[in-house]
Image 1 (tube, helix red, strand yellow):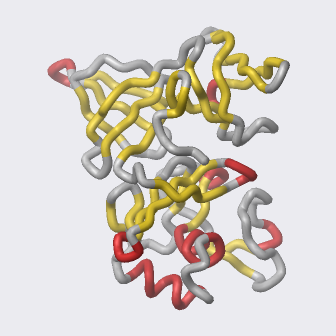
Image 2: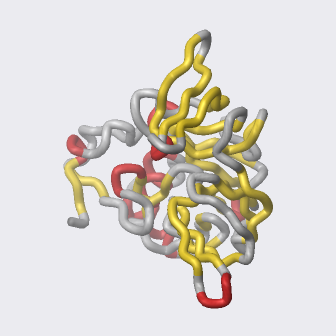
Image 3: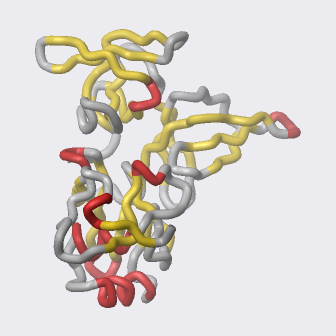
Length: 223
């Protein structure tokens, strides 16, 4: 399906529901329920175009970079922590789950955090890391799933590993606490759950709904 009724679009999409009947469906490596089409980002969120025709022209011209690479697919799904850059404007934004979906203007456009969701040992002892945004990285480093990596864009060079452990700072990307950035109080790796500080109480969150973003302070700008 290429089109979706606006009224049926995910509630967290910050769009007008009654201006037009249909809207573009995202595609790509991100999960559909956690991504939004590039054309919607350009037209409806950044408001760089008045209509779909103008937005397509901007995207097709090669003016839009996502994670340091030109993207000309108007359906390309933008997921949380993706970095959008428009060099001609000298501006960059990071997608965050704040209030559903928000683009935060940033200066640190050359770095990104990704979660390691799986890994595979290759011949020669090297490791293929499968990341939450669909990227795959081959490395000699011994890294663990559920941890995150801070990497340089667009080279995808690993700068450091961010471990899922007590004291780590995480971003909640789903569930009723989505958008929360907090410190881990306790980790239960066996049952894949963590407890986070939220005000004066602790909240329990499945590890599938969090991304480690630092320790003490996030390694990237999130707000």
